Amino acid sequence: MPQLDTSTWFITITTTLPTLYLITQLKLLNMHYHQPPRQKNSHKQAPNSYWQLKWTKICLPYSQLQ
Image 1 (cartoon, rainbow, N blue to C red):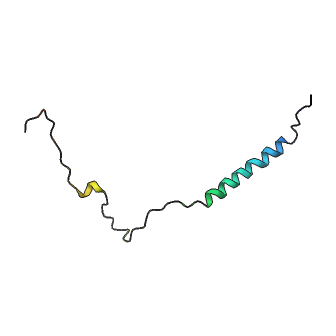
Image 2 (spheres, rainbow, N blue to C red):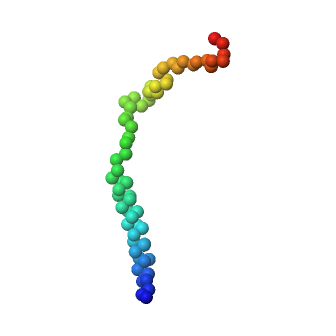
């Protein structure tokens, strides 16, 4: 029964790891990430939240008298 030749494994593994790292970095470099739109007046920020523009009604529980 022939034996498994492991003499080239070290070189194969040590060259594969940096290659995979570089390929991953190049893929990430070419990705386009979403950026939020820039505001015209950066020093003045108006509240854009939905809840800040409206009043909310607070209802009493049924157990309390009105």
